[in-house]
Image (cartoon, rainbow, N blue to C red):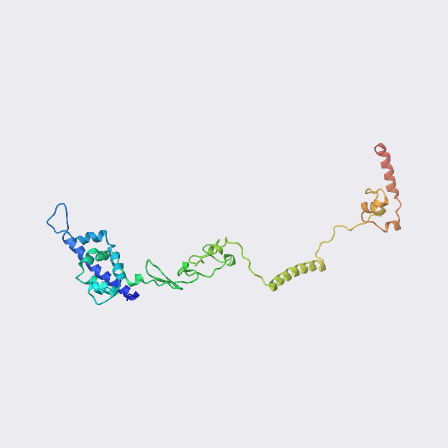
Length: 292
């Protein structure tokens, strides 16, 4: 019966057989070149060389035909049924028809090898189809990264700003391994919310308000504030309410300023003689202005 191992052995045997036919055909063509126009005495190359160049896919038409029939022993004269019988018939010297119709043409195709057929792709590895190298994935969840050593992301804003960097603006050095999402963690990325526990928040607030209260207490108890440039004073006559524009006692509360409550009890000092003489002299000298 046809199995996977038998199929692989069959491909290998056909490849070796047809490679030898192709090399023999090329040597014959080189030793006896054919010139249809000037040299009619030289034997032309066999017709199957032209057939192979133009119709090399005939091979792929005959193989499914023989495989589909099933057991080919009665057609090939071999005791081996199935695909193995076809191989023995193709390799025998009693099969000029098949060799002429396309088996030798397959020798011109790239030879198949076991390493090119097998593809080792698993959950943790992938295969580079160009080189055949098996690549172990660093992160099976992201096979597109292959074996890139994706480092742990680190915010550039959390790095030491006073350290020496090759790129101070980006806080990066030559040869640093970059995370695949480095554009989300560099200096131009938005600020990230960093969780702060309740105990840390209370501690920071306690330090802040304690500092303000300590400063205010030091100013108050140590009398660090400067003295006032003048003493606060009070004014007689109900805080100069009438002088400031009050028309009645009902509106005195609105116009008056700081009231000297003891001025009414102490009374008003008598006018000094010198001050009185100066006032009379001033009124006489400016009588015309005062009357106007």
